Image 1: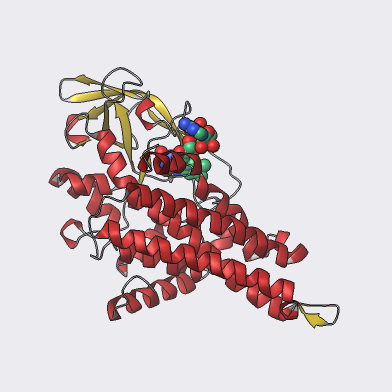
Image 2: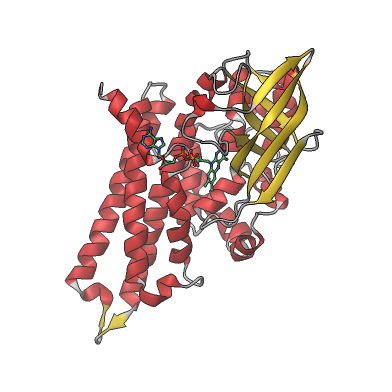
Length: 379
Ligand SMILES: Cc1cc2nc3c(=O)[nH]c(=O)nc-3n(C[C@H](O)[C@H](O)[C@H](O)COP(=O)(O)OP(=O)(O)OC[C@H]3O[C@@H](n4cnc5c(N)ncnc54)[C@H](O)[C@@H]3O)c2cc1C
């Protein structure tokens, strides 16, 4: 393993595995059908210190760094959880970091602490119906009016948007599309802020996704994160964590699918012999394992560099693309090795196959990662 293993990290893995086994696996199918995970899950995860991993104790977190968050994500999926579960339960991983970085005690007390205690749910709203890749082109606008902003616009595909109590919202504080962005925390229940329909999706069924609408929503200036017009930089700075989380979800899903397919191929016999006895099948499993492990090693390497403060924007983009490519290959091969059973809802591999498809879209698409990589190459 590339991330340094310590007794604390072994304990964290055990804690995560025990949590998923006891609190998630018996109910995950029900949550997939319900379209969301219950609020009580956040409280349970907070009580045992899992929700706050990666956030300092000074803001209500459990301590640990990016590498510890990665271990939690990895272990949760390898224990039979899913990337959809991570998206739903750990949405605060994208909703809170800008507030924590701003060191604004008011925002930290009102939103960060209760969220890490599992009593509030937050979301991050950047994407708009007109486009998500072009962050600078955001059209939702906030006009200053005394000690308030008046917000108009809409957001879409927002993870946990249905359940969230507040939304860290990217708004334009100049004319639409000007690129001068700020982040505002907008509370559910503020007049003019409505949550549209729950969006139905290919995968991530246990993670609710919403459209949000803002019509003359008055938001106190005190809910702005950091100085005006620093939103674009804040978003870009936090993208590294989100992208590495998605990369982790990708390689961990791949690892889990290698395990599921290996077990299946040992147990399943065709033409009088176990599938795993065929060279073609063994080589397919070997290739799946190799790609998953290579992705894991590279993501860990880049995460270590991010945690050490190195400016590795290009490498983060490469890590996401490498892990997503490994995952896409593995989930497809794993489902194929399961034959007809792999296509059924009863098969865990079926869920991973559907859930995996978003990983090359969310947090910046594979094409946008390639743009970043090309720029890093001086192209
Ligand atoms: C399940 C789910 C959860 C999500 N959760 C959140 C969330 O919590 N918060 C949030 O803000 N957003 C969220 N998103 C939105 C997600 O981040 C966007 O979908 C993503 O960034 C892509 O934006 P878009 O869908 O508008 O595609 P577009 O930007 O319209 O792109 C469409 C296609 O064109 C390609 N493309 C775009 N520009 C270029 C270019 N210059 N060169 C080459 N190709 C290009 C893209 O790669 C893509 O393939 C979520 C989406 C989904 C589906």
